[in-house]
Image (cartoon, rainbow, N blue to C red):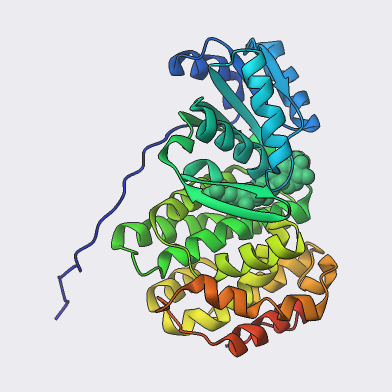
Length: 358
Ligand code: NAD
């Protein structure tokens, strides 16, 4: 007999309005107007200013200032400079054009100065869907939650990803897949989160297949990344995110690349103890060993499969095992409870890049 019961759960809700579609960037001015922005500061990178010029040529945002200095991991001096510019131009709204770093800068401004923003993501990091913001001070990255750092609206335009190098696109997609996986086995997961995870995993896997076949349209990957961001927003993250945060932050490693390398090894550890997540990933990758498929995808894209390829020293990586375990809290919330020695062994496998094995 089928068991019809559903365990009690809570779901935090999905608060952010989305405009999705090719060319959606040209609706940025209308979105800003709907948000009530009168004096817009654009925060972006040098590359993002080209995107802004394209938008302005069709439907001008009419920004009163452009801060093109957003940097990886949102350093405190960058936050200070951007806030000073926001103050100098009396900005009442921000438009973030870029990856997780530009979105992260807009989040920091929203946190400190309560200035709302609209996000135009150009990568698959998914930060725009969460209330988590972060800042790096003297090499130490700290993150916290604040509902004010959610954007007013997100404009997902797949054409904004056309310039993303394929290796980086694959790594960024695996960053999104990490959100999906950890949400599917989180202690506070639910059938609702798992159905989002199932959709996102299938769409991301399909998008990766299209990308490896040379289709750079990015529609499915961006759609999958938006759902992955919802997953990240809706459930607690586990050991994978702790490892990437601790190791990536301490050794200043590239964010998406670190996620992509570590994920197969965490899947090999956790999926045997996480039935639903295992079935979601196995179905999405049409394989009983999705961790192996993910390493194949990385190799096909000539992307690194080993932390050593990112320039990290073996000793430095291994030495962070204790900090990862400390970050997991006591008691750990699974799905697998790990010792520092086990984490050290996992980190070593990720450093060498050997095949992820259950
Ligand atoms: P990023 O924004 O630093 O971008 C990585 C690199 O890709 C940069 O050199 C950037 O210029 C380039 N890039 C981005 N989009 C491009 C495009 N379309 N074409 C060509 N180049 C492009 O990194 P990311 O991986 O997007 O985001 C990582 C950051 O976001 C980290 O700081 C991470 O902590 C944060 N993040 C936060 C959350 C959250 O919920 N708070 C979630 C995920 C990631």
